[in-house]
Image (tube, rainbow, N blue to C red):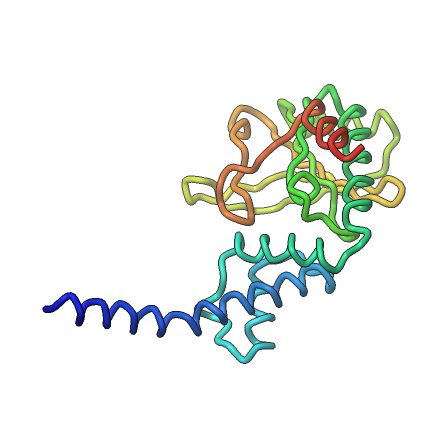
Amino acid sequence: MSNHKRSSRRAHRSQAQRPADRLRQHIAIEAARILAEDGQRNYRMAKEKAAIRLGADPRSGLPSNTEVEQALREHQQLYQNNHAANLETKRKAALKAMQFFSPFRPKLVGSVLEGTADQHSRISLHLFCETPDQAVGFLLENKLPFDQETRRIRWHDGDFRDLELIVMDAGEHTFELALMAGPGWRQPPPSPVDGKPQRRAGLAAVQALLDETD
């Protein structure tokens, strides 16, 4: 086959892919808008809803969560004038909570750390303990109201694990405390966005983030 014919076929494939790529981008942008404005927290549901709105198949050709997260960052920068102030407020609240929970070596994770949190976002912390009862007892001793939840997550090896959570309100913020009980939870859980180990930040790192905005 001549070089000219091979080049023509590559060009044809590239042109055929462009509409699909554009549609993926449009779905990512619409999904980001849904996440930002509708209070939706589930990336998959936001993508499917966006695809339906755009007349696309919600079962295939969807953008990755990473693409949606990037579109979300751009949406927040363009259309949410109070985003930076809201994020700083949540990070300050996270820092205070981390100081309070210092016996449990707290780490900030999730959207408040990554910079995509909005007014609906929980402040997510990982607390390290031998058993969940240690953290529960600490809250009871301090007479703090809270709820307990269990979340089933897919671990790095493909198996499912049940993660014990404490959910509590403090002022205008809702905190989600994931109890990293025992040695089996020392490895960061998979990120719900890209499946990689979640990024964690300790007290010094969160303080550094706040210092950057001062």
